[in-house]
Length: 161
Image (cartoon, rainbow, N blue to C red):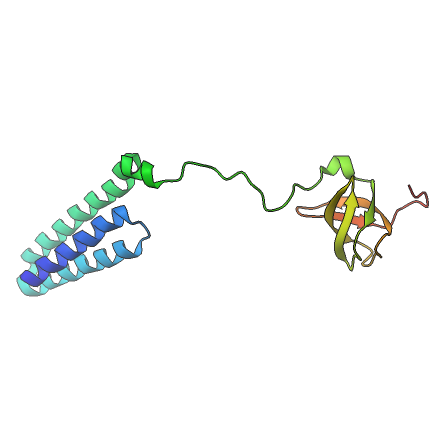
């Protein structure tokens, strides 16, 4: 009997700790300990003892889930431990507006084979050459914009700006 109670107490403790230290592993171990306690109750005390242990495990599990998902998020503890700030920084500079740059001329600042960098309006952008290769210093035309780079090609006209 003391082993079953010990497993339940350890399981309840780990489930309660899961409320404070989220992550899932502690709660899973606590649930497994409680299931082992229920299984031992069935083995040692038969159907009646196992049913009582199962009922207790279900009630404790319901209480812990209610505490973790309903009460804890509203508590002062959750507010103290939760992040409230939003990170607005970006790892990449914003890519140029598609409508504003299509057809504009750029200068290759590196060799594009097929990727490299171009300069446009004093800013450096990552670019992809549709022709496959563009030499450094070559004038190119912006033909498209994808998520992270400009798509460039050799100018469609002989008029170089």
